[in-house]
Length: 278
Image (cartoon, rainbow, N blue to C red):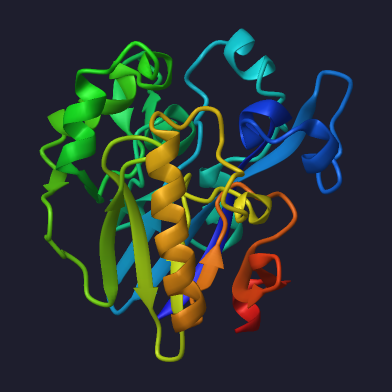
């Protein structure tokens, strides 16, 4: 098994959104905010090479929306999942499976595009698409709080492709990848636990989006059920310490991975490193 990080987007998010009720005087010690209170964010996808399968986790924003939409996200030009795949020696046609942690636009937007005729089509023409059934049902009938993060043009082409698979509770469709769901950020978010020969790597998605979100109270303000997020995080972090999980961060611009340890201040990150260093 080979794990290859791929940057889909570099962009910015309001620091208050990223850390919820935690005051700026605390989170700004690790994240420098610009004049608009925005901090650097990345979307770090993961390509898993496993025998004949090339499994991609999440895809990034894509580019089918108007300029105004991307401008308020301060997205860095020239970076995309397609370009990152190409730089790593792969094409979109090489991908056999795409796992979506969830279907917010910054995770699924690049899975579909407008072709030269202006029609929607899937970017990964040979891929099977995977998402939890609980989350698909949630996204297709969005609540008012999350509605702005779900777009029909991201979702319907996947369904119409005939290659969309809805993962039910307890289903495990992949070898050496355990699928678990968490419900605090959004209903039915998938978090993949990847079992290499030597380590258990957990792709954190928006469950713990950055290393700075490890402390229990550091819950993003966009989580639909922050108290559930808090409980899920507390249980997971204890498990992560006991099992020496490697946490792989999707949205941390500076830290790709870390392990966590117990301390007098609770559970904290021990050291940061890149996945190719394990």
